[in-house]
Amino acid sequence: MARVRTKSTEPEIVLRRAIWIRGFRYRLHPKIPGRPDFVFTRTRIAVFVDGCFWHGCPRHGTLPATNRQFWQLKMARNVARDRRVNAQLAAAGWQVVRIWEHQIEQNLDRTVRKVLKILERPSA
Ligand SMILES: [Zn+2]
Image (cartoon, rainbow, N blue to C red; front, side):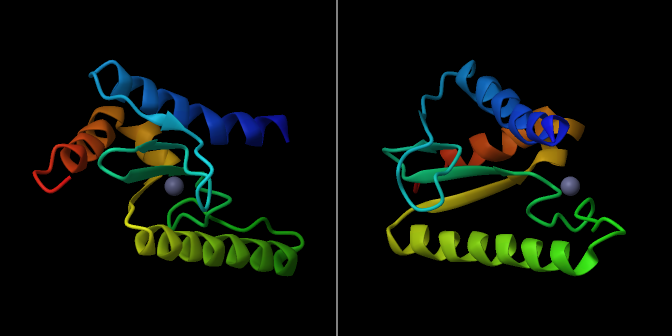
């Protein structure tokens, strides 16, 4: 399980450090629905880095061969919770940005640019 935990937290740190060094300041794990990984309070942008396995990434959210029903239920619950959190945050005026961990692992620069583009929108 240590491996799973490491994989799900590291990409988040990699992403936020890359954003920090570009001069953007955020708050970590605020007490709002879903506890986003980090938020930009002034522009009300909440960023989640979703683990491919736990959040059912279409490319990497493959279920283990054993205990399929258990995993299916667990992942369906996670996905449903993510949707609920998105709706709660949107209702409270937050813009939700969800990043798959594989996006950070495969192309950090592109992922950082994606977040910065949202941050730099005139409406933000
Ligand atoms: Zn993935």
